[in-house]
Structures are given as structure tokens and as C-alpha cells.
Image (cartoon, rainbow, N blue to C red; front, top):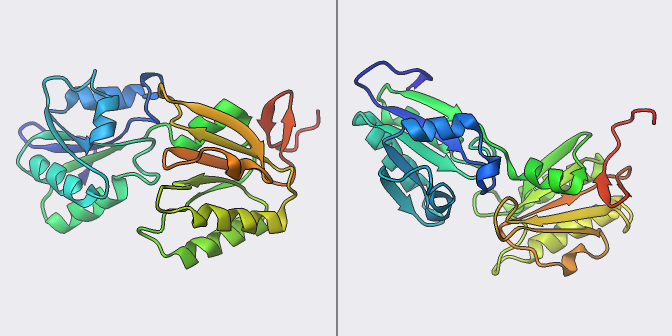
Length: 252
């Protein structure tokens, strides 16, 4: 495993963050990496988001919970000599494929170049739709307990809420997993008033985008799913002419 540039005749692995979904949120670096790649590997929905960039390339896709298999397939093709793009939504290094890819590449015992290509993450893309809720210190916490125990997640929620961080919640709710968001809300209510601004952005950057501004007392009534990001303000967050803003402390 080596960083960045490759020499002629060997494969390379790009781990590419493609942004939240729409073409306007892709970076030029991501598009260039995809153009250079012969093989593109990813979750089927993410490949659909970039279908205009991957026509004629070898595609390897699979469904949810198959991340390890996708990473192994990408690494195998790179070892065989192909230039491969392993794609993630958002940023590949934020709840994406970069960490797993580096772990598995290290285990493979073969030397080949790897380049991590950052992307626009869902938290920042969602925040921009609401205004400027992440202007001060903030935390991103995933409520999915598939890979981390719920007790650990609860501890992090308590710490972030108690420290008055603005918090962006990833994977907030699914059809079979609803209590976690309710428990998280009760934690925040211990530290913040009911009128604290809360923004729910779903499928940001796609044709199905939904942006709804609410507050801590009422946001659970909204449609929230695995494609949503929930941004909970801190004690100083406010609504200014319809915008969700967390002041940084400048004199105005």
C-alpha cells in the first residue's frame, strides 16, 4: 500500500466521495478520479448518482451492508493492475469507505497506490440549505447501532449535548429503528430549551430533496429516514429571517 501517485503498469485505488447525490455537489477532483478509472465499485444507488460519468466502465455494485465485499473487490482489481474508483456518498472519510478500504488494503499485503478523494459531506450540504447552523463547534454522530453499541452512542450524545455542541445526526431513523432518535431527543431536551432550532434535510442535492425547519419540541413529527440528516442547534442558535444560524461571536 502506498500513497497517491502511481507509475506506469500498476493498478491504483481511488476512494472517492461523490457528495450528497446531485452533480452540482461533486468536486472536480472526484470527477477527474472517475474519468481516470477503468473500474468503478459502489452501492447501486450511488452508482446511479454518477451514471453520466461511468458509461462504458466496468461496474461492480452491491446492496446495503455489503461494504466489506465491495472494498475487497475494489482492492482485488487494483492489485490485478486496474485503476479503480471505490465510491462513497458524501465524503469517503466521514462514515464512508476510506477507513475500511485502508484496513483491508493493509491486510492484503500487496503494494499499490491509494488516493482518498474528499467530497461534500451530508452535514455541510444540509447545513448550507438551512443557513449557517455549523458556524461554531459541532459534532457529527451516527445513530446507527449496526457497527457501534447503542450505549457508546448514548454516551457520545450525552457528552455532546452537555458540552453545548451543535450536533448533526446521521442515520437518524429507519423503518425498524425508531427509538434511538427518540432517546437522543430526550437527551438533548435535558440540556436545551424546546424552542432550540432543529433542521431536517432529506436526500439533499437530489430530486427528492426535502428541507424542513422545526424545533426540539416538534421535529419528531416530521418525516425522517436513513437519507435524512438532523441538525440540532445549541443554546445560542437562532432563526434570523428564516435562516438557521449559530452565531460565532462576532460583534454585529
